[in-house]
Length: 171
Image 1: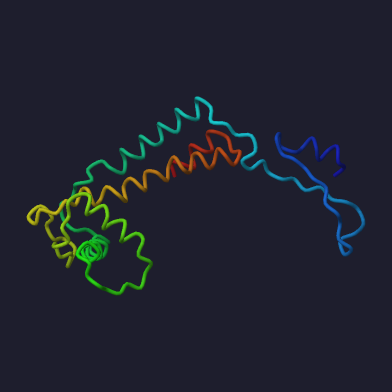
Image 2: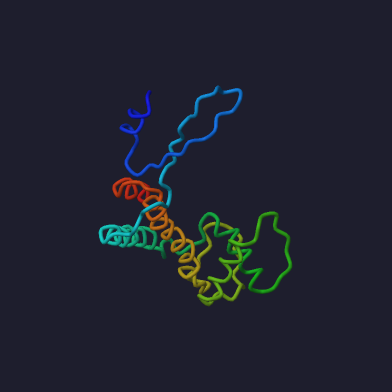
């Protein structure tokens, strides 16, 4: 394809640069198309409205009925147990990196969890023990909701169209 045809087929906003050929590749110069990552994106009014909309939808989806069920579920057995140990200052060994469990412990402490409830098994009742489980579930729900606007903004900043960013953020 000759250079004039390449320019006609190149997406708008894509820059080109010539690079020197290597000795094994031949003697003619080649053209490399570079994508406009973080090139000229500014957040428009429509971007802002869509960003607020997807953030609102994400918060509603992740926080709706956060208190149901009022029993220990799945990974709360492990995270709750470790949170209690961090809050009480109990020494323990954990094979995995501690950041998520420490954040869960901080959320529990802020919510009023005293570290006494024993997360022995799935199905234990929070309400009977007075555990502020909604406050502890709120941290992962909020962090999960924040991935949606982050995905929208990152996709738009990479030069993708608004509908593509919307689809990516809602996946």
